[in-house]
Image (cartoon, rainbow, N blue to C red; front, side, top):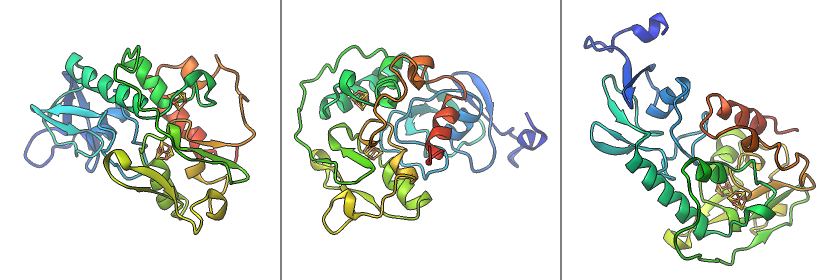
Length: 255
Ligand code: SF4
Ligand code: SF4
């Protein structure tokens, strides 16, 4: 722990929180997710990426903080918090949320280019999900293949808004948005025609690379990395430092 981290919060308490009984240091301004990430403690999540504004929508990162359920990606770390994360009951809820995400879209992993690199799939494995449990929706959603370099398959979109935030906050554009509410919520493209080809999305944009599932894919890159040698074929989703590997790929937008 650095000298800075050892500083008290001003009321004499050290800048640490406890996650599943493990003392973890934090710095002023960090969320519980930030502090956990820095300490190598995995809290399952789908809609969060360091560097983008926390969204708190997927709810997978919900933890119990002093007996109250809160999203760890939006909750500031406060000295002395006692946090439950990797518990049977929290993981059971996370598994149910993940199952609902699967049945709400059309996820046919063996025929999906994202398989092995997909965070939703990896989280499902992590949580021991063996089936969708609930009846399949089989929604009919529009695929947008109009862009020369990028394809949008809304069947696999989990509405995490990572592309929305990346476009706005990193690319300086406003290519994507969510329209509708509840079961009618869907990803839209901000262009006159509503098609990607008429938007200012470029293949090098972070928004074109950040999708945690196979909803936004770069064209003509199919199976460049063979199945069996992809990120989550080689690493567990909660492995320490793995998120940095994934982020490095996202940030390497010219690859
Ligand atoms: Fe499977 Fe992920 Fe593709 Fe969905 S996006 S079909 S979960 S690999
Ligand atoms: Fe998230 Fe991908 Fe859907 Fe965008 S397209 S909201 S990144 S799942």
